[in-house]
Image (cartoon, rainbow, N blue to C red):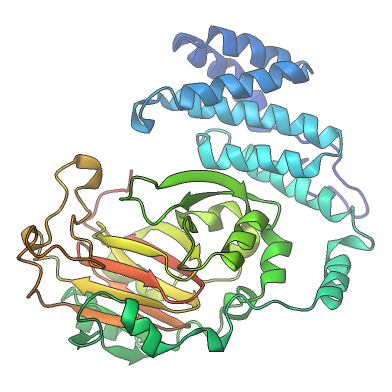
Length: 422
């Protein structure tokens, strides 16, 4: 492919090629026009001919369309239009040596764009990353090693950060006083299927992540900054998604790392990289982990692989998910509380469609007058340690609190009878 970082030994790609865009552009522009995008189509045509202001104007126009109403009401063609504009803008940045700006445009194409041009976006990112690495003396690897020697290695989580007696004072009432989730060491796939998957029972699996490079690399702030620092990611700002002050932002991974290192549970506006498909976006991080064999139980398929990364004190409110879930704790510790899927009425789910998998009950401050059924409900809970995986069956309610800075990965999969994730 002409868009690979090195077309031949000793030669490098100096332009971004977009074969999918080139072959699909006429049909895509026609589709955009049929949905009212006459002005966009004119700007995109000018952008393809080398007009940089037109490319930037097309990008802004597509962005406005994405936010013209609720996300699910936006026609999919505008997401592809946004990807097209991101590619045009990235080409101009790349040709001017503005590699960070090119990366941002391409990452935004991944985050907000449609699937049609994804291969072009991914291959363009490879080209930009390769060019960016060549800016350093002797290539990126040597320069990075020199930088590490100068600055020293910064740990994301230090062992002394965790004090269990202090943690117990901030956890929900009755925490770690009822039934604790059982642990199994190096559980076989057959044992997992027979004892937990078929019965729909949670379990902590230990000793299954020791071979992951992520176990050491992700606790190294310098490594994370080196492989992902210039990439753009979506983050959540605020206590949690049920609070009125909660919002979303798009920032660089380096900016996010700075917030994680400076923010704690006392921060007024903590920042969380939550339920983001980071590993589809940043291949270097994807190489640091492996999909557990347990995710193939039931004859289904992997549906989603998400990152959860943030400071101590971040809370995911009580909710349930539709799929089998293995939560792998790579760095740091989390408290997890689980209620059976049978407790739907007793946990007072929201009536709104968008939130009907979330409970109205705030476990950190339970209103027993408004929610009297919660008080005596049986639950399981645990402190999920580094290197442990927690299996959460479908529809089981769960509340999660980061006890330290924490980097986790969730693997969602369906069994053979489940429908595809939308």
